[in-house]
Length: 168
Image (cartoon, rainbow, N blue to C red):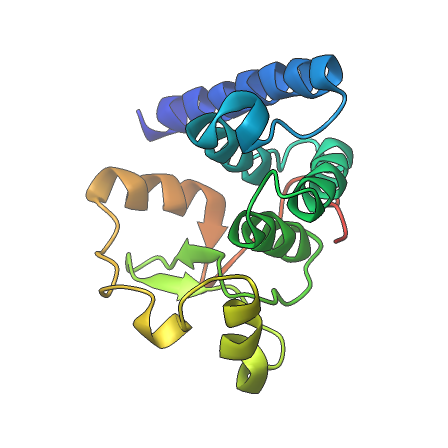
């Protein structure tokens, strides 16, 4: 059953990516908050973060989002999330500490972070709270999620089985 759920999630992410591709092509820019509203702009960020199956498109979305931030159409926090995802996918340390994974014991673990001493300074520059005060401790993954994790991860660190990822 867990494999079916993982397949359904991957299909949904691919379908969402196709829809975002159409939107970006139609607008010829990032779907910014003045164009599509704040909720739709955030939804686009969420879809972009989960476009791991298409690294070239994810890289393009990162460039478009960066331009949108410069134009005041998206937030620096949104850019930080996608930027970190691209770095993690390229097997590089993230800058803002926004990307995590569930260990096999169900505990949330951040992907490696570059220059931890400057992390909160970078986060402040992206309008993100300090990592230590970003919120309450995350809950353990529910049992169904842990089953999915077991399908995708081995040992104490995720295996990267998808194609080479975009570089930030």
